[in-house]
Image (cartoon, rainbow, N blue to C red; front, side, top):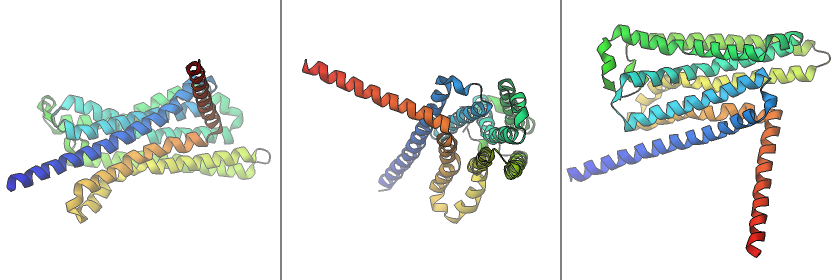
Length: 317
């Protein structure tokens, strides 16, 4: 009887693990596929290449694709590969942490671009050039990688260097488990989120003032105002990943029997679902992207119909 119970528990654990991994991987495929459509539309249409706003947007989309792929890879590895070499694990964690920080920084950059377009329209083409946009993207990656590198430096100081020759389960809470890492994570999250929110609030207030003063181009100012508000909504969604650990510590102890399922649900709602919504909200709303997307799918449907008609004609002959 004991062996039967153990076998049943083992099968239940395997079924639960399979269901979780299948759900996460399926959502990742959906997110990457949807984002991939926006990337394809961007690179097939040269009209986007010279606009800093679209360059920053596609950087946001590609960055989120990278983050989702790395996050899901780490999630699957936690079940399938328990003994990961530390150097490989640290590399994955640094890139994942950088992509995570890049999202709010890119949203801040997009808000500043809209602020310049509305509040300083005569200087917009001089300030927001394609070259400077790519320089800004490089700076975003440079600033975004700092927390991950700092975690690595702290690990090298706190732990003996021999730790890099060992293996472990590849997870940031497991690898960076010291109190120094916890303080560092809180400080960095607070610093980055505060700076980004200050930029968003400042740009929104400036655009709001410009919209009230404008006598000719009120529609453009109002559109920029709603765009920055949209960036705020996107930022709220991506900031949800900052409260994952807080939710785990608050609600999981209340129902210890369902700890694993609550943790998984929390991860799903705060890390994966927002990455599905943020590009869609902006991409579908943008008229130029929507027009290109509509043209792309209309063309595809037309080609399918033509091929179907040709096949029918061949079959009759």
